[in-house]
Image 1 (tube, rainbow, N blue to C red):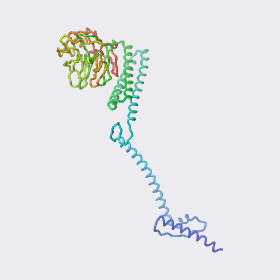
Image 2 (tube, rainbow, N blue to C red; image 1 turned 135 degrees about the horizontal axis):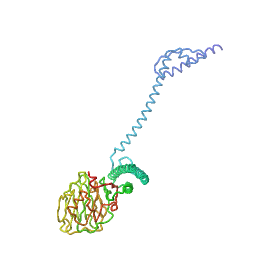
Image 3 (cartoon, rainbow, N blue to C red; image 1 turned 60 degrees about the horizontal axis):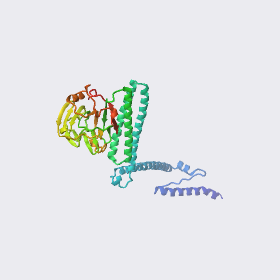
Image 4 (tube, rainbow, N blue to C red; image 1 turned 135 degrees about the vertical axis):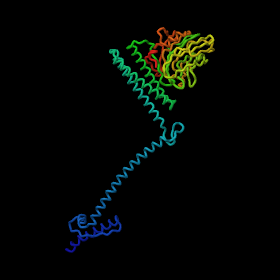
Length: 425
């Protein structure tokens, strides 16, 4: 009985050694182990660490290895996440850099044209919202100015006008870019038309505000065409009558190249080039009457204001050209015995290919116009000189006179206060 009880600790000791030997052999290969007796009631691992230096070193090594493995595992997880992000970015880059095939699709990728369209529409919508904000500010300005005719109101109005002008140029520039990249986009065209309508309304409202505050004459204004487009223009509200002679005079300022474009064009049913003033490409400025052409000796694209006058009579087709009050050239046989026909459309800033339309952006006027007047007679040299020098004796056109009530503005062309000779250069 006693022998059996005394043998139990040794059985436990041997069993523990076998377990340790088997486990250690699997983990560490060929290694020398030392078995130590363990008193009854003492924890095996505690006794082993207390009595065995190699076992303590072994535990330290195992703990270090475990810590290293955990660190490596964490590093691997981080690297996997980095690899996943890089892979995603690389896929997007490859998708964007693939060549575009027919229909606007890239090989092996989904059609992304819808995304581009949404970006375009959002951009124009944002600009439209900005213009609506300006419109609200203008309404507040109108209410303020009605009760406060002060310098502060004038200053606020000027700041608002400058802001509108800057926004206008941004919108029109953006629209031109979008039309070049997507010429058939119907939604963009509708957005553009809405923006242009808002711009035109804003400028009319500011003009009315100026008249109410300044009581300035209705002929002291200029039209500005900042961009070469096929939708920015002004139009006379009435047609020209039949004319057997005429004089047309205007102030003009431009530095556009090549060619300043078309300051004005008059079209009638069956003849789009009834009366046109145009400088297109590298050609000199020309006047067309019934599609017949005369080259004019004008040099005006220096960014300065110039006064131009052209006279013509149907008899022998005689014409004269004046720049800044001085005759620069003359000729004959320009559409002789052809009267200028009535029932037409007079457009400023665009050349007409059809009655009242068919505009070509390459022929559009870029610059500023003022004081366009037309007479149904030939002015004298003295009369033309009075106009060019702003003499008080100068008369307004009896066929078409330069007043705000005679002109409609479209597409974002702007109207500014202008007085000849005082505003020069």
